[in-house]
Length: 173
View (tube, helix red, strand yellow):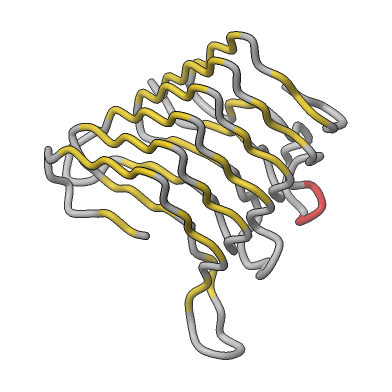
């Protein structure tokens, strides 16, 4: 699912599933996210699952100078980045570009990268009761991230973890 256009519209998903996303034809495959949301005033997901995609499960960016605020409630991202290894770091859920995200009760496990990983300046994430892990980062793909559950990568990104759990990562945070 790709939502783009940089509008200030609000987008709400309820009980949606995105699996096995991959682009290209035959041997020229490219990595794709289960959900890629670019721009939107508010983006909210309730009880959605993005799993077994060739890149990220949930992926949020700004577009057209519109920086979305994101709410995820009981969403899940499993085993992303395992079917086509054209992307180095693949996350269960990730935000970029100064986006603000609140995650409540999410589960992000087994992706090839940091399962709940957020990057870029001014990105802010608050996770409440989130479970992440079952990964040792993206080093298996030649990357430089060795934490598999929760992480921020570059710049002044901030993440608050409230009653969260790492399950099965060599380095959780």
